[in-house]
Image (cartoon, rainbow over all chains, first blue to last red):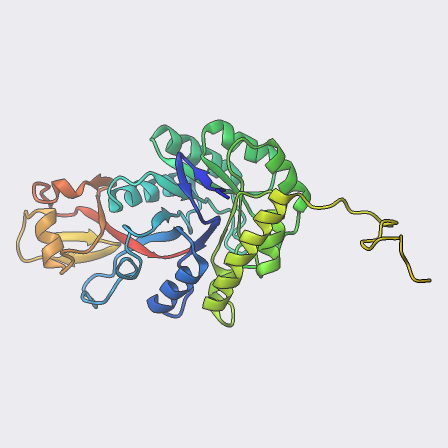
Length: 260
Length: 67
């Protein structure tokens, strides 16, 4: 069955998008990403170390941009201006690459998004020709406004970045999904495989995660688990679950032909 | 001349050289990076022609692991 994720006119087989931070080393990063099956990987844009270890390998040596779709992010940005500046540098860095992840944070303790700055940045970036996947609060009105601005995907948090608390408000996610005409992906908060499956069963088009894999006891094995959970959740969503009933009164085995 | 690179002052013996020369001096040749000079992006195609002057503020960035 062909069930592809479509983002900004490009299609992907994997609905699991992964970050590249917090791993022990680049070899582990690569192994985990291979196990996850992810095609889209996020990277951060930072000042280059100057005058030291110039021969040392970089992330790009292990994850060639020809092999993956890079999703440069604006992690660490607290204003629309900083986020826009960062992504313009990313576009230059990646030879005119348009697909980006916008996130504008509101405070360093929770890393909760600042939606006012996020919306301001989204307007500038869309106008500037970027394909914007946007990290946002799970507020259905905010998600709708980001869609109307022209973002190519909205990515509400399931719980705080790096918290591993799972899907805290499935009801809001369902409202966002029901109202959206663009892909909705859960970004942030997934802790383990069942969280990923739940998000996909709700009808999310995909999941973006980093810490759940990188901070697992065995990141490569967790990456494999996440791949399966995302696939399982997606298939369950497409299959359509049975209705929940307090009493069944409908046994799975025939009532006729009993021996007593 | 003096340049401010990634927030740090750096002194250079010669003056009036190009971005391409700076990249080579800093042993960054062949690395994938993006450069901003005084808040404006310098496209890679213009590294050779873009001349730097005393006091220019440069940001040299690359991609690193992130979520």
